[in-house]
Length: 270
Image (cartoon, rainbow, N blue to C red; front, side):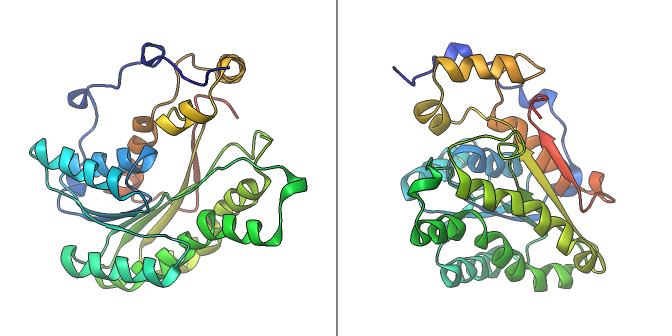
C-alpha cells in the first residue's frame, strides 16, 4: 500500500498577513534544536519572519542549509546553524555556546528535536532504549542547562519543550518514544519554580499528528486517514505552521504569565 498523500489533501497554510505579529520577538535571540526540517524548520522560519535572531542545530545538513538559503532568498535574516548529533551532549552544548557568541545570550529555547521511529516492545534492547532516550529526552535537559546563565543575565527567558499527544492517546508502536515524551511534562513542571525565580518561563507544546513530509511518507496510509477523521474534532489535517504559532505565542511577552503548563495543539484529538 502506498504511503503517499496527495498535496491537495492538505489545506493551504494561512497567509502570513492574516497571522499575529509579536513586537516583543523582534531582535530576540532564539535557539531551536532539530530546526532543519519538519516542525522544527517551520518554527525557525516563523521566528525569523518575526525579526528574531535565530540559531539552530540539526543532523541533516542538506535540509538545514536549504532552509537557511530559502529564508535569506526571501529577504529575511539568515539563521545561524550547525550540523549536530544531539546524542553527543558535549557537541550540543558547544554548538549552543558558539551560537550565543555570535547572536547573543538566548532569550528563547525551543527543545524540538525528536525521532519517533517505530519499534515493538519485544525488540527493544538496552542499547536501543538508551539511543532513543539520547535523542528524545536528554538533549532538552542539557540545552536548558546551557542557556540558563544567559537567560539569567538577560533577566528573563522562555523555554518551550515539544511534547507529544501520541502517548496520551495510548498510541502504539513506539514505547521508547512514549517514555521519553511523557517525561517532557515532568521536566517542564519540575523546573518551573526554580526557573521562575529568574523570570524564566517554561512550557510544553504537545502536537497532534502533524503532516510533515516524513509523517506522510512513512506513516500516513488509508487507515491513518480514517483515524484522523475519527479522532480529530476538526476536519483539516494538522500542519507544522499550527505548532509554530503556539510556540511563537509562548516565546512572546503576550504569554508573560504562562509557565508550568502544557498546551495541546491537536485539533481536539485528545
